[in-house]
Length: 236
Image (cartoon, rainbow, N blue to C red; front, side):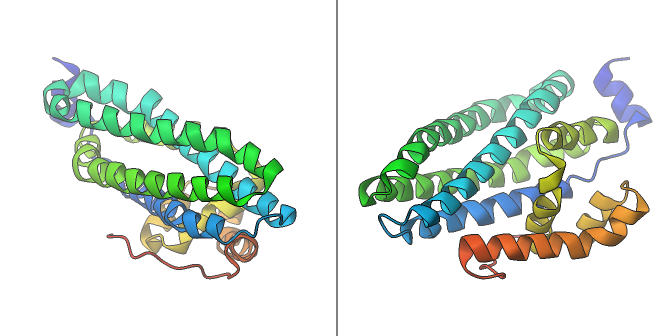
């Protein structure tokens, strides 16, 4: 019996992929807000540039690890188990990933220069690049949610799905976990958030809402000037 046949025969009963959509929502919100965050930095304001550049580094690093975890843990399984269904999507996904990576690399080169120069020209160049990056992310993540996640839901096991999040999380210091959870919870479905926390120790489940909310509000005040930045109203 093939891997696909054994999976369909009952060894896999479907994976809830809504946690990926919830992570996408956090990323798409923060990247969509980035152009205005950068645009509002006054030339010569070194303190503000440092805050915003750190925020940029934080988001781009998270996105990089998110995509790497997918590349290492999701695509090989799906290519093995449902190659015929995946084939029409591979070119689209690869081209979208390439465009996002290309923009991330360009942003990554300019941000250190902007930290030093604190000038309007590099700021405005970043604004344009970040607007392109946000649009590319929206396009890619919507396509992934429409076409890849339904396939993944019936193709991978729960343990294999959990490995994606585990690899992505392994790259982040534990000290930033309350903030990351706060960013995800801000527009996340409470039911999905509860499921994401369900395997954590009871103490963490009890403390996480307050700690993550506090961490996010403090961070959002520093970056966005408000503890309640705009909710961009993405589809559920």
